[in-house]
Image (cartoon, rainbow, N blue to C red; front, side, top):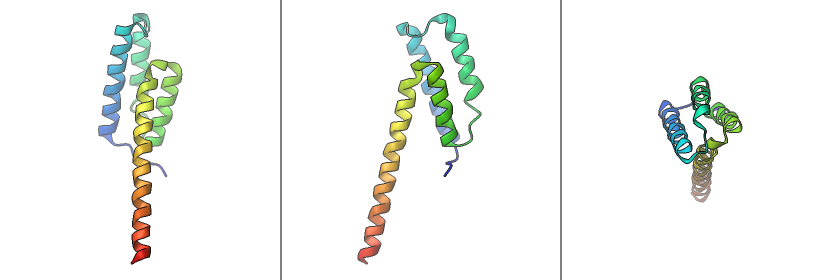
Length: 101
């Protein structure tokens, strides 16, 4: 099932990517001569996906090209997994409660 992409989520991730770019420049992970290419790549792709799943695919491709974004992608996928786990537990609890009644 495709989950529609929330604009707040898209903007939060864009901010995370921007912060990560700044950190990578400061730490020397990203040479300044690549800054323009990285920023253009992010700008060209961040508004394309319309679903959460498409957004994750886009982030995976971005991370493949620019490994500095691995921490952003990992953070998002771990949060999504946690949300899925909570939803699964909640669903099981509801089913158990319905069976008991």
